[in-house]
Image 1 (cartoon, helix red, strand yellow):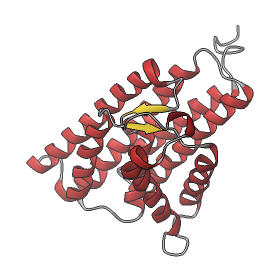
Image 2 (spheres, helix red, strand yellow; image 1 turned 180 degrees about the vertical axis):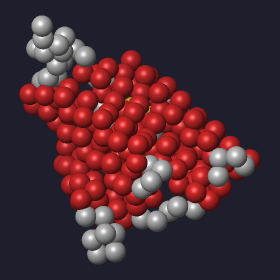
Image 3 (tube, one colour; image 1 turned 120 degrees about the vertical axis):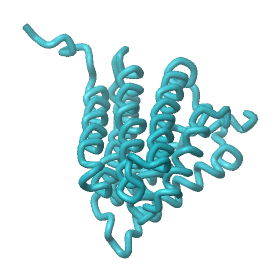
Image 4 (cartoon, helix red, strand yellow; image 1 turned 45 degrees about the horizontal axis):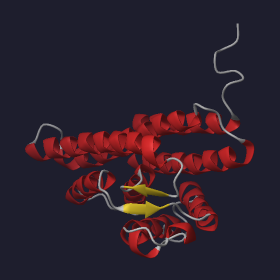
Length: 231
């Protein structure tokens, strides 16, 4: 007897599932090797972009949007939150008031990611804009930050709290155009494959692009079809 998914899921769905598996691996290694965990989260982001490309060109399944959100919970909710806790507790520990604040922030980050992904699946899937900072973007900022050496506990905890609020905000973000998504994908891949190249050039470039979109995207990056939409 064949598994139930045979004939029901597409190649894009398989990539989506691999995204979740990579997110799980990031959680597993976060305590022992935070930098590797950060690279795995960025790799999951590459897979997240690839499944979208495949869905548009070779088709997806009815389960695709739900699988995508479920996978993103693992890779861009739980995994980056675990990464923050792993880095912070090296300095603060878990049994201190500061450590408790860090864990609370990570838990709120996961909760906000789940809420944001659920709302996205329900309301924004067919639009070229979305409300709230995308979970992928939030996880890229945290992971690229760790790769470039932002490991100060206070900085990471504050960043996690800020991103938590932004994920459930009503700030409108336009989807990236194909050419810009390709550029981001290439930089993502290079940051994963050769993070140490020329003084961590690619992690720095990725963090710069992510922060630029985070801060400027709602006001200065509008697709032609949404130019009249308010931020």
